Length: 304
Image (cartoon, rainbow, N blue to C red; front, side, top):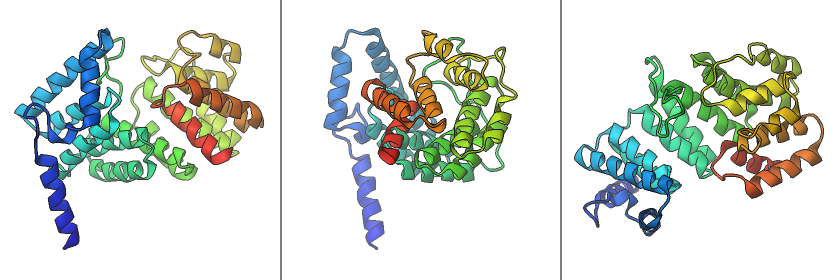
């Protein structure tokens, strides 16, 4: 009985509206302040974020289906308002509980907010929902240089589930998820992203031969559209490029992925002091939502 009352109260709270132009799920002082900052900003990035949010909000208000709920949540999340995006996805799940996409996107933002157990629960649910279904391209919120989406629903679910387990240091479960992601991959971008995490897991687990086998299909002539950092790291692990070449690449050297991958390389090769220094530098200067940043943060808390 108590559970029913709680759910009813949640439904009422989620559906009440103080402002007809803004869904109640994001009508909070935090989100209103962020919106005001976007409106007052004169940068092209913030103008685009605001314009895209307004388009998503209009679509949602006109047709609050699962797809428009997802896009509203995504546009809000791109501003860094992850808790507000989670509220949107939660309302969507209450209405469209069989749509795996909602769990996939909420799970992603649970990772962003360091709620790893909740993320694992969401991605596990998503895995159950996609079982036996045909995979589908997942459209980009921020198009790549070719405006060619590379991710799919299935690969994203498995990838993020693997990441969440990795961040909890559940390496066997992470291995299963990333292996599923690799098996579902149909392009080189997805191959290098899954292979990179699998390689790090195998090295951390002391499985050098298994790690080496992951590098066999990796070559310089792979067709990479987005995941250059993972590709370059794998080439470094393979000995095709040097550490100087890896760090000297202007587009790669400062990325959270490269810094974390290199720090982790020092870690499992026995130089914990160097690894710790690099983890700390990354957490000090990196982008808090980057997966490399979150992984460095988790390692520092667990190991040092």
